[in-house]
Image 1 (tube, rainbow, N blue to C red):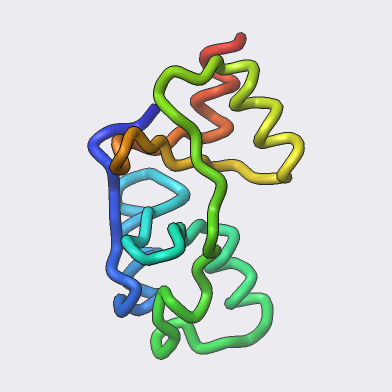
Image 2 (cartoon, rainbow, N blue to C red):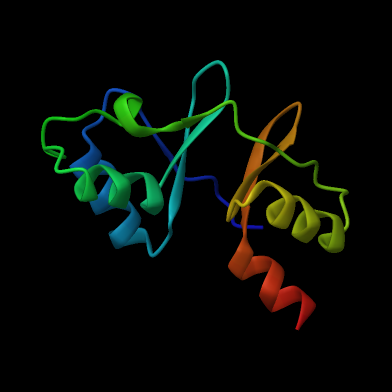
Amino acid sequence: MSTPLETVSKDATVREAARRMREDGINALVVFTTPRAIVSSTDVLDAVAEGRDVSELTVADVMTTDVETVTPDLYMEEVAQMMTTYGIKHLPVVDDDYVGMISSTDVTAYLS
């Protein structure tokens, strides 16, 4: 699990979110909204591929909402199964509140 949790405002531009991900060497940021949301490099890539202007779009325009989450005590095999089942690469870790993010890279490193 990656900590500290990296977040971005839903009002930030997609360009700002992409810059943060690149600078921090990560592929997803948690967006504090209800329902829970993240913006990932895939969300950004999809917007670019669709010809959308990422300097004008906000994170809220492209973020993935109502994301699946996991608890800190879940086994890595279960996390891997969830990622496979839902076709996702990132899962926020929640224990009443956000505590971190787990990625497919984290799972692969742990299980190899």
